[in-house]
Image: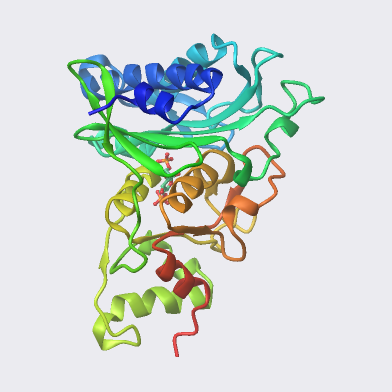
Length: 323
Ligand code: AFP
């Protein structure tokens, strides 16, 4: 098996991008160690603080964010970084070629129950003639990402990454401390019988989404004519990995719980990187009206509806009549 950096060399990846990825990988290995230690490392539980999202920060959120910031700001190729746990953009080297956005620990509500959690990252080329700490650096459509990936801290620690040509998975060899290529050019089946959604929000969805999901639940006794299974990890990184592994559709639709916040998932460091990974594995990723990678970002922490996964099922959902 070849390791990540041999793979990147084989793919002729830009040396400065490789060095940036080394910073991400080194931080993720530190995070993986602490996740495995759990209570023994004193990383569980919550802080007294809230992030800009209004969410209580878990100790591991803060630790993971700091680990990534320290290593990324020490990398000369990082001009700026944005994080779910940082209110604003953090400037790096003004001559850095890249900017990076990340969710340091996606699935925080799973930390204290030993559930699946992960780090999601998204890398763009820096924009010239814009200050390193200007949010405008990150107002780039997801289709311009040069690299996107996640590290899933599960029974094994996995890196799933795309650098434009295909989506590949690497497994951390904890003895050697290296990520080894374990799945190359992953392809997501176009059809599926598995969906992922938080059903407790059903009364808040629009009528079409309620009918689409209801018909999945009706299975072979309803208009779909086949039975479906449901999974919900409460960590996008875990649900997306299942879809990358065996197909499915993941939905976090808009809802009317809070008119000021009709959507939950963040465009910059959740929806966009996952959309690139999914599309480069043959899947589709839309909000309710357009391809996620074509959304023009406006705010650093803006939120979008997400419908992604097996291409034919995403199409079915987006064009649902239910007749
Ligand atoms: P946390 O990181 O706050 O746990 O949120 C995780 C997440 O952003 C995404 O990873 C999940 O798919 C989604 O929220 C779960 O949302 P619900 O808790 O509303 O099901």
